[in-house]
Length: 140
Image 1 (cartoon, rainbow, N blue to C red):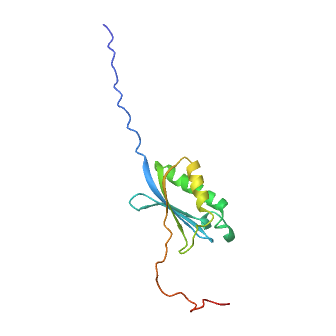
Image 2 (cartoon, rainbow, N blue to C red; image 1 turned 120 degrees about the horizontal axis):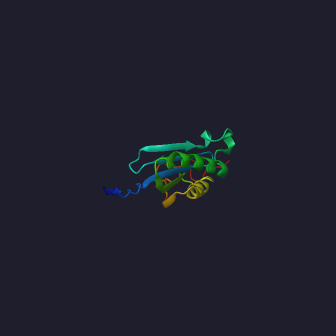
Image 3 (cartoon, rainbow, N blue to C red; image 1 turned 180 degrees about the vertical axis):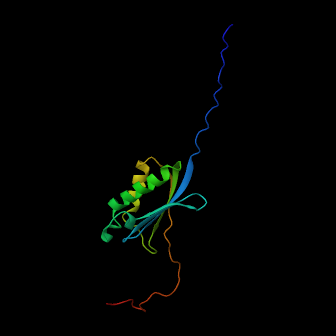
């Protein structure tokens, strides 16, 4: 009896769907908050400076921001997220974000995430209520 060779057909593996997420970074000069959402706005992960350090004075520090980014990366790598949209927000009326924003973006890109877009969403007042102080401004 001749032996029959049975061929097993391998189905081509579907590539894993590469998921995108939005990283919202709020950096003031007192704290750093990173909030990761999916594209529809559901929260995936949220880490603040106070969750990473004991010392209150260090919350808005680039070193602490790197630890925040490391913890965020650990949380979202399991979900298959590869691409990130970054939205940076500083305190209202501030011209520049706090010291942690650049450190977070750099750490996330080093962790293997591809950053598609960086957007500044700092709120800028347009008119609004009258500022305190009078005609000559506030004097000490």
